[in-house]
Image (cartoon, rainbow, N blue to C red):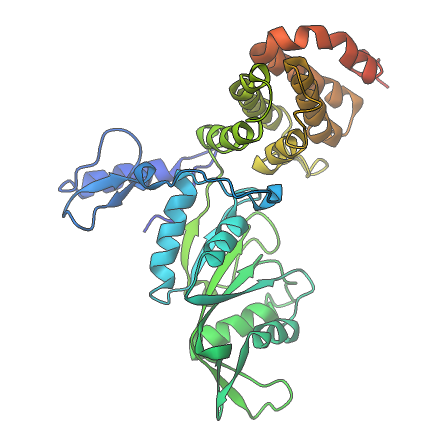
Length: 381
């Protein structure tokens, strides 16, 4: 209950739900800070709650892994992972709904990777996926057991992860054939063979996870399918979460660097979070600038570039600052349409750098202007 609510600009539905809950269930005492979503029921102690923050595991770097595969535990993904695991083990389908950059796919893939008693198969839907293509993917992970009964190979249990569930083409009368096939399985635990329509295959020992972006594709899923899923909302990370995630990643990377460079870690993270918030606030999406959507992915792109730095080359704080400013320019400013907007973005970048990296960036201003060809002060065209 309340798992799919979000905190929008216009209304914070999570806060309203939290207030209604505490007013109704007064026998359960919640701490004054935070919302009911920040606490879990203490199963061993009736009418008591514990903070999800106390259940967040420590970040443990695993050697050299691709940046996009890094997972830093936060309150949000610890909460969603725990609820997903509880539901999957009871064979309840789970759907994560959230905008771009909320970590839906990464969270579910990481959860499935950690499962030792279940196999997993990922199905990526797109605009061109039809029922026949989806059925071929579904049947690749199962085998005939006996008669008309089919199930995962080796008698194990299987979890299908259907990503971008709402992306398939919507036909003239509002139908989506892949969604209809999934709905048929959910209702009848079976589907028909494509070559022999008289053969009805009974599918056993499989369950489903799904993810969708409610601001893309068809924007929704047929209610006849969605009713089978427990829907949970993947929230955009808060600024505190961003500081936690990128702070731990950058701190680990800078460990072999000179101490003077290491001391800049928190300042670089703070400047990056401020830059993302400032750009997202100043450059809102529109019909013409529909790509003006700045999320955690953009911040990740900045740090992905910074993490390419070597301790043999970035030996002083000004060099780290110069690298950071370059990455911000490429990620944020290069996405803007007009020279005037790009110039304003550069101004925002210099403001953020001056606020958190003032001593290190003062000597870089002239160099940066020369590299950019004086773009900040270029006349309007």
